[in-house]
Image (cartoon, rainbow, N blue to C red; front, side, top):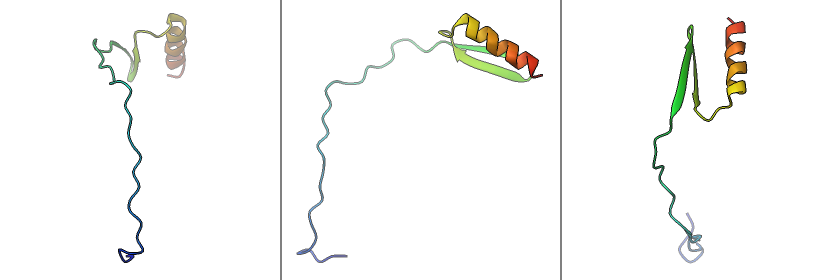
Length: 62
């Protein structure tokens, strides 16, 4: 440990917050699909074609 005469004071960076974070007003809606012992979880915003490809891939891997 340095003696007080040789130690520099701690440096701090100021924290600036421009606006408060918005809280999520509606709960996130999730989609859950069980295929055998595999469970796919996603939100409802997933593209239907992409979801179809994922389901087909899971089925093909079984």
